[in-house]
Length: 39
Image (cartoon, helix red, strand yellow):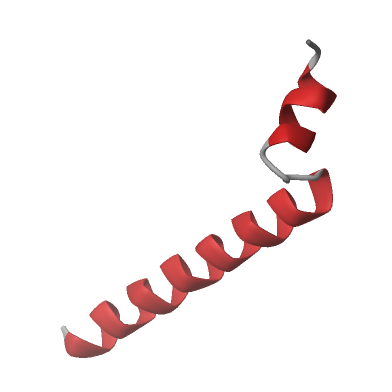
């Protein structure tokens, strides 16, 4: 089984993965901004 079939098995495609990563990065950035404001 190759990687593409593995990803299909989990219902993950490249675009979905990239969107997820962007969401996490955005959330992380917002969290850092909040901490800076609190300090």
